[in-house]
Each structure stands twice: as C-alpha cells, then as structure tokens.
Length: 90
Image (cartoon, rainbow, N blue to C red; front, top):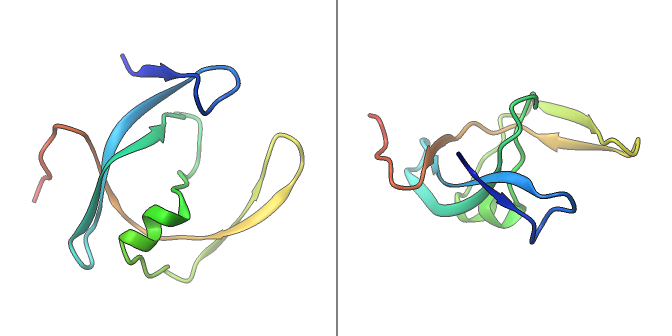
C-alpha cells in the first residue's frame, strides 16, 4: 500500500517514490514523489525533473483541464517508470 502524503496535497493523496528513466539518453532521476492516480489518462512530472532527464518532447501536445476549469497545454514525452528499489527491465 502506498504512503499517503499530506505535505503537498490538501486531502492526503497516495504517492510512491519512483525512478524515472529516459530511454533515449539513459539518464535517470531517482526517488521522485509520484502521485498515484489510476484514473488519469497521463501523468505529469515537474519541469525540473524533465530538465535533468534532458527530455525531447515527441511533438504531440495535450490540452489539460483541471477540476476548477483552468486549461493548459503540455508536451508529451515517453519515459520508463520504476518504483524505487526495483531494477529496470531491459
């Protein structure tokens, strides 16, 4: 069972510590707090993590709409995600 985090979320939310791996350049960032949302179509990562991974977006863009009705656009990138403590699969 994932730990519920109340530091960053008003209403504690389930997070896991994950390692994100960019398969294009083999860079990784470990122990990233990751919100577990099984109903989400996509997952977002902080820009600071994307910068460390030197991500090159695929060119595809999604328009997101929050519960409050605010809209924003994000670029898509493909990463590998592993829970901290697990090894990457080849």
